[in-house]
Image 1: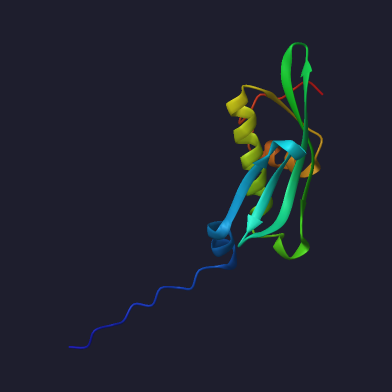
Image 2: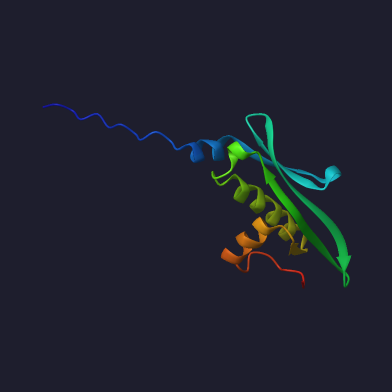
Length: 115
């Protein structure tokens, strides 16, 4: 009787990038950074202010190097920022079009500031 060898399908580039990427909060520069294998490949910039007595985090922009787009890394970066906003008990104002689009597809993740 012959054994069949099971071959595991190779991991996708997206899966590998997700595994080796890391989101780091850099409060001194008001941004979240996306690092892949020791290289800075993207940033999500924000500002924080008090509006009507509540902390509001405004996401200004999300930028990735072109070769890293299309692999879910922008989403990973956005999720990192949203987690931070939630931990702070703050509201989010998404000026960034990428963040707006993400929140449209995932309503209720975080309290939104009035436009």
